[in-house]
Image (tube, rainbow, N blue to C red; front, side, top):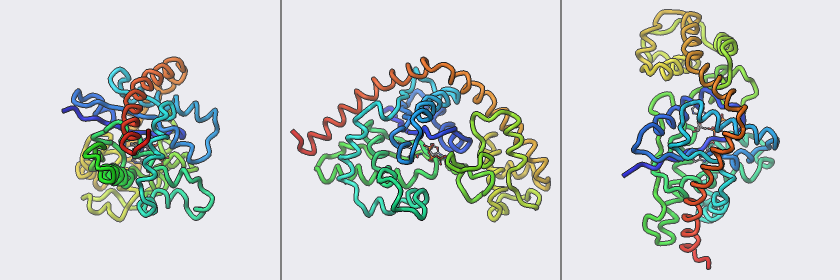
Length: 334
Ligand code: ATP
Ligand code: LTN
C-alpha cells in the first residue's frame, strides 16, 4: 500500500531555516520515495487568520511554490496547490467544527502563544485554525503528515476529530486517522537571538532567522551576530542542556551535515564559538545559496508557478470534492 502524504505551509513571508530543516527537507525525501503519493498545500486560508496585505499575499503564495521547487520537490510527481482554490477545505472545516469540542481547542498552546495577552482582539479564525488543518488532512485520506514539532498538538486534535466523526456517525473508518511524521532530532529550530524561542517568520528581528532567500554575506553576518554564551564548546552533548543557544547552533550544524549531535560536539569540543561559527556559516552558505538562487529565478516566472498551482488544483479538487460529498451524505444532508 502506498502512503499518502499531506502537509501545508503558510504563505506568510520568507520561509526560513526552521521551515526547511523541520519540514521541507523531509517533504523532499518523501517526494523522492516512489512508495508515497505526496500532496503539498500552500495554506493561504490559514495565512489570513492574521491580517495580510493582498498584494503581498499573492506574492507569498507564488514564492512558497518557488521555494518548494527550489528545495527539490518535483511538481510532476507531487501535487502542489493552494488551499483557497479548493473550496471543499472551507466547507469541510465548518462540518468538522461541529464535531470538535471547545475543550479540545482551549488546550491548544499555539493559540495561547499567538494570541498572547490580547485574546479578545485576535480573529476567531486563529482560534479555530486547527479545525481547518484537520479538514486539509482528512479530505485527502492522508496516512502520514510531515511537520515540525510545533504542530504535534494540532495533529493529535486532527486524530481526535477523525475518530469522533467516525464514532458519532457510525461511519467505520471513513476518516483515516493520520500519523504524524516528526523528525526525532532537530525538529524545532530556535531563534538565533533567543535559544528558548522558535525560529519564526513572525519574529520582528530578521537577525533571528536565516531566510532561504538570504545571500552569502547576510548568512555570514547573521551567524556572526547569533547569540552564544562565553563558555567553549563542551566535550559531551549533555552539557548543552542548560545552554539553549549553543545547543541550537550545534543542532543546526548537525542537521545540515547529517551528523548526530554527539559527533558535532566531538568535532568542535574545546574550541571557541568563533571557530565553530566560521564552519557553520560555510555549511549554511553551501546549502542555502543554490536554493536562494533558484527561488529568485523562479519568482520571475509567474506563469510557470501559476501553471503548477492550476495543475495541482485540478487534481486536488477532484479528490476533495468527492470526499466532501460523502461527508455530507453521512451527516444527513439531502
Ligand atoms: P512561523 O512560526 O515561522 O510563522 P509557522 O509554524 O507558523 O511558521 P508554517 O510556515 O506553515 O507556519 O510552517 C511550515 C512547517 O515548518 C510546519 O511543518 C512547521 O511545523 C515547520 N516549522 C516552522 N517553524 C519551525 C521551526 N522553528 N523549527 C522546526 N520546524 C518549524
Ligand atoms: N498549521 C500548519 C500548516 C498547516 C498544515 C496543514 C500542516 C495547515 N494545514 C495540514 C500539515 C497538514 C502550520 O502552521 N505550520
